[in-house]
Amino acid sequence: MMDRLQALLAPWIDSGWLPWVLGGIVATVVALLLFGVRAFVVSRLTRLAKHTATKIDDLVVEVLRKTKAWFLVLIGLSVGTSLLPLGAQVLAVLHGVVTVGFGLQAGLWLTALVGGVLRLWMSDPSTHDGAAQTTLGALKFLIFLVVWSGLFLLVLANLGIDVTALVAGLGVGGVAVALAVQSILGDLFASLSIVLDRPFAVGDFIIVDDYMGTVERVGLKTTRVRSLSGEQLIFSNANLLSTRIRNYQRMQQRRIVFSFGVTYGTPVSLVRGIPDLVRAAITVSDQTRCDRVHFKEFGDSALVFEAVYYMLVPDYNVYMDTQQRINLALMEQFAARKIEFAFPTQTLYLAKAENGGS
Image 1 (tube, rainbow, N blue to C red):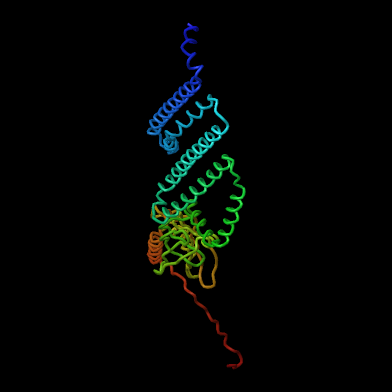
Image 2 (image 1 turned 180 degrees about the horizontal axis):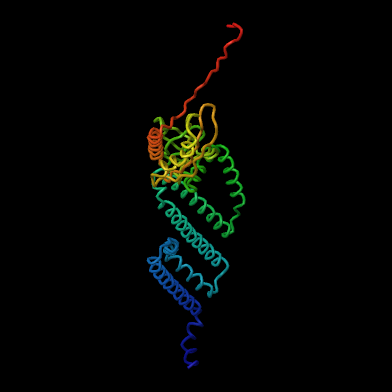
């Protein structure tokens, strides 16, 4: 059997074609195996992703689908040609081709990964406005630029090209550009911080220093707020994030403190019952929670009471409607019990002079 096999291979061995045939077979088998593995893994992960709520497995499938057929063929050729007696120059060319191919495929994987992550960000309801989409688009462009620039330099370095001077030149140029557009870059990165960290979103009511209003647009350089009086307030993104922002849209409950006074002539029995009247007026609604009601102090012209309660909804109009209802209820209850609200008064005592003095 062995003699017959050697007799069949003798012409190929003598002619030098056997390594090439074996290399071609190995390259074909490796490429076909890689095609089968890719199809199997993508198919299994796709079925798995349909039964899970997380988006991570969908992202993995998307990245794997970016594996190109020419890349698998290139891997097969790389393995197959390793069996061939090739010269140094041919090996150098093959090494360069493989390096470029791996660099391109790595770039496709990274861009698919970055694009998928940013799409997850964009699927958030707070980023559905056009300004947020524009900012995220700019972020995507910057990331792609950095990824492909880095891969380009790595490929050049693996091809034996000295990239030191190129990197140094790009560094100096980048510093010069950054200094020239420092303000613009500051606002741009502040815009990215607003979109990614989301201290506020379009539609939120915010207060910045002495200014307040509803956020209308978050742009690449400025954020625009519509004030209560109607005019549009424009803030630089960098300056906006350097100040304290009060976001009332994120308020879960509102703490309310109010006080009132009754006259000094009010009987003690009625004064003792006032906290219960106030507590009853507050808790009549399921949107309020009474914290405390106390006879606080003896004022200049009134017995002062202080009440604290929480609005369980943040809406300001609902709070004002509730406070109005409480005030009217107290007026009705006090009127029924003849309790008088105090107002600023002064009593003057005049002493009559003795011995005929004036």
